[in-house]
Length: 293
Image (cartoon, rainbow, N blue to C red; front, side):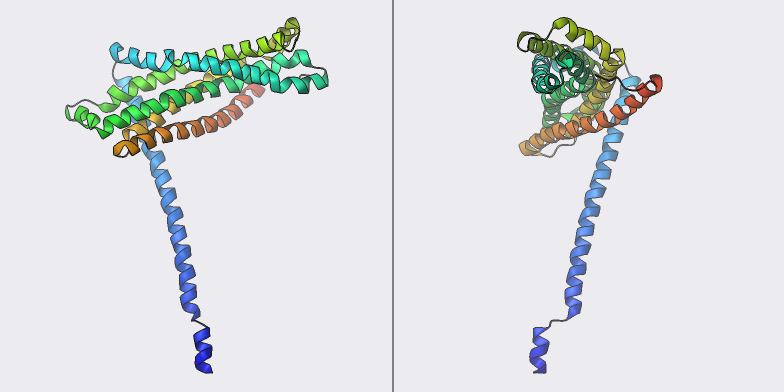
């Protein structure tokens, strides 16, 4: 009887050791994940410092900058303009019912235009830039890394960051404000056309309320944030391209990660920059926020 009892109840030490080992493995996995993320942030920071250093250390060549500017800015204008146009219309469609219930149809322009110039215009322009340009930059540089073109460039004594990253960084940094302005303009135009032609809102009150509730600070706020978005897109995309894995799968993964990480970083920057700029606005305008009623 004693022997049967011992067989039915295994030693508690083995079970405890198994639970302890499983918990230790989980802690180790979490620690390894955290260390990889910290190392990744440090690697991107060093990459950004090198890029900014080469940006100011030597004059940039025009024959290298102009093709980068054309690819980043000119070819991105149609998609940004089309996106902004339809976003303005969507805002008019979604906001009209609520404003009509309150009897504030003529105030529709203030909400549409304020939302566009402060938030949607910069974020949409940056998202389109990350999707069209950021992924392309990561794929192009990743292909150069896989085919050892970057290694060949460095073996000849040239700095790969200066020749490959700095022109793309400058293109994103300088041209994203222009893309943001285009997104703002087309969004305002789309919201007005839909409100005027389909919702039959009086155009005089539409623009009068827009001028009353949207000022220069709101417009400059969106432009200011766009500089940070452009810098983040260029640095993240080029970093993924420079450090992609071997093979076609590695290039595809680099392009995908470049867009995903850029988009997440855009939202994070938008949150913290929005909080800071709102505090700046409240400091210079202590009378409080503007009201629609």
